[in-house]
Length: 278
Image (cartoon, rainbow, N blue to C red; front, side, top):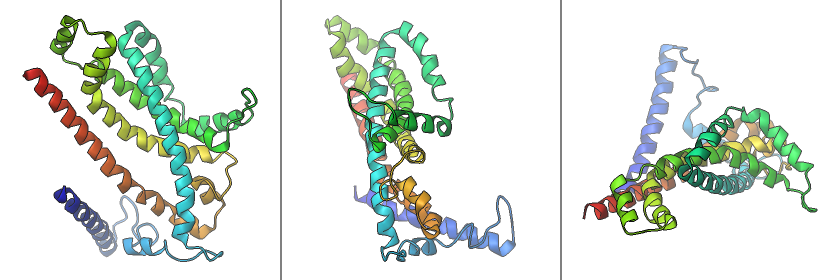
């Protein structure tokens, strides 16, 4: 554990050195490929971080100004991820158990991701705003989570099908010889075997949910004090130029969780294999 903690600053230092070294070399040589390097296209990293701490015209720290809208968008992405992953897992279980259903629905599942999200997001977000179900109308942030769920369910569905079908045939025959029910086979054999596939899908889906939340906020009526994308579009030009920095700061928080999840799933799979071998 201590070794993993020590690796993080080393990786960050290596990335910092790579950034500054690339910048210094391109400026010294005057190279313009793949792009011209200067203080605008590739500023110093310490200069980028320093720009998070000046105060806005209202006297609020820029970092604080960006933090609260980012939390709102994170809520949309988290709810969209949970809903999309649940739907994707349930759909994957159905497709893995019924081959006829898989042959009929899987082409439509794949085709659903060929529609550009930038085109379908305004239709869904605005359309749901005029929809009323038994007197209930989805709130602005709830409509945005639909877009996040839409991007999330696909990788989870595909990897769930692959994972559930990757079970060892000998283990499956052993479960049948014990007269195990389909429910027991699913949760005690198929799902543990599918964990590595599921966590790989969760990595992709976590990123997709954030993208869907940010894109979905653009056509919604979320106020500038709530959503991150709405805050960017209505904020000062100064905040616009550095908002991407705040977005990149969210990545280190998700990466360790994904890595831990992958290692945990690998440990579970090795335990399952060891049990089979014994």
